[in-house]
Length: 183
Image (cartoon, rainbow, N blue to C red; front, side, top):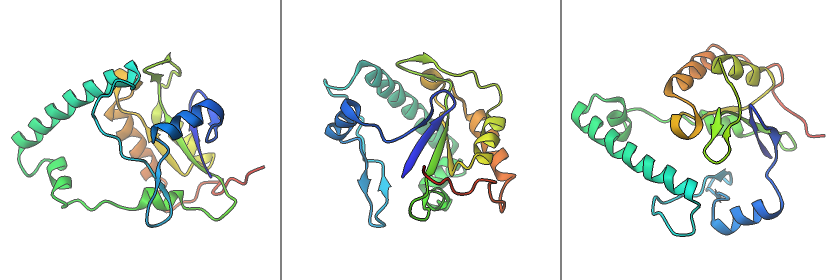
């Protein structure tokens, strides 16, 4: 089982009731891969009429940001880190997936660093994302999601850099709470 943790909401499960039914009917539940693990379902950037206004605005803004980033990468040439990743020069590690793979009957937690929500506004004051990531690591979180979209979620790439730097300091060390047993 995978649970998500946020700085504001605490631990939440997979959800039930109308919200779960809506996710299932919208196809946002995820799909099984060949390795029999759940991976996110593909989403298109086609803005349909049944998509909530908040999501429409996020998608429109992201399309603009991606177009600008593509132009920046093309102008920088093949040495740009994103160009290298797209060319397959930077190998993608399986660290994220291996961190989520746990023995049966243990809880896998993805902790989240998120300051605000596009639909709910401000949800948490996070002065030091690295310190929060350390707290998550000490509590046994398997992975950390760092939202870097400033307009929608209040995060920045600097938040991600700080968290990565902090988490890299634990390489080769086990969290004090490696496995979280369900009640």
